[in-house]
Length: 585
Image (cartoon, rainbow, N blue to C red; front, side, top):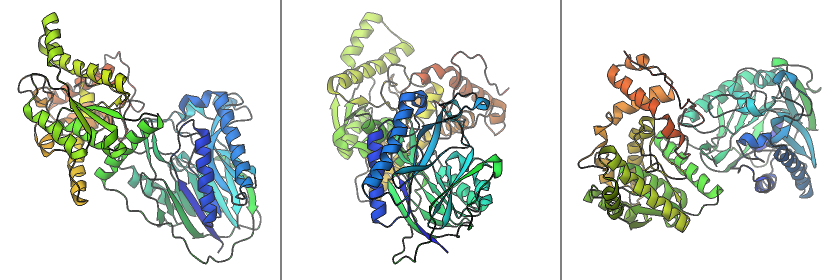
């Protein structure tokens, strides 16, 4: 059987940085060719970064992407790398009108090209366009209508882009009809909890449907609220895993494959879903046997909690570094949320780039101040203490506030202090709110909601505790000091805005609350359906009402790393003015 050495480059691209992204492709292709690769591939939209959102609607950006592809092809040839085909994702545009999709000529396309001998030998667009969750691709792109196939050293390789594997039909059965020996899919599929298991089963199933070895090449890194976890996978025609890349790391899977020989005559015609085969022969002769075999490796998947924690670290690091910030500032209360955010920030950026401020008021307990100081000592972050009592007293004397207004004033004074330090010293402020609080509106606008990024915005409170415990366990396993004080984990959660306050004064127990919220927010279950699972109907109605009436607060919260199937933001879009209320009876 013919052989092929495949180089799958699982890399991190930055949206809009075409020069740096192109340089990364060139550098990694150089290494892959030095390692003897015969086909080199990069993820979906590598040259532009992903997702480009409304940048896709700017003709200037589309043309810059097209120019970058041409420049890359020329650079590869100039460096003597042109004999090895390179598959790279980018932004393109349609040359012809597509009136059935309501788009004029020149509409953008989520595309990839095969570069060979200084030329763009083949360009194709994603066939299935996702239009759910965070995806709006039908808003931006024209779908592709071909099955692209390249012949490399006597093997026919069918090509696909991301959603082409996630949806039934299209290029997967078309690859079988075309007799492909390998199906290569380039992807930029965002991370969400437990998706690695879903992805593996998907690739196995598609390989059996395509009847050939299938390679799923994924992106890694972060972009705004999205994180990409890599986890590229290669399976054989029966679904057996041949190679698997590590999660949340740039990596090249270098893998030698024995694949079926292509038919003497190149495939042609129309196959599944009306796709027209677009075939290019790049090299027809098979290769001799390898002297040294590359197996690609099998990276073990991370545990559930380690996976989530690494995603949060990756998301924060990407947001800070890609936007040119140098340091972060966190209000440290001694509580579990700010402690976990601080640990994430230290792991993402290093302790020298993390600044904390303890801002006690008359209601702050001594252990809260001590826990903040203990956290700083354990992690090495830089801590200062600035009490808000003089400011609080001045406001109270001037306004005579009581009740909730008095409580929220303390939070807003802390927010003002953090933003003042941010302006003065150049740090960005991290908001420590979790998903349970945001769902129920248990946060103060312009107070604890201030900040440029919310690292645990999509993390329920019960998972916050689990992550804190797991981070400390991991430190002990490595012989390190656990970063989060045990008292921050063990004590009852409290905003400490009035004497002896605890969260359960205002909210149900988090174990119950989070289960209700997960059903309502993440799964869109109705009140009666939730109550039928054993929850008190009055409690369900109350929690759902809190969630519905807090929508205006969530709209004003900063972006934060998405780890669930449905985070607050692009995943879940509800009207601010909305009189519909769920009731469990």
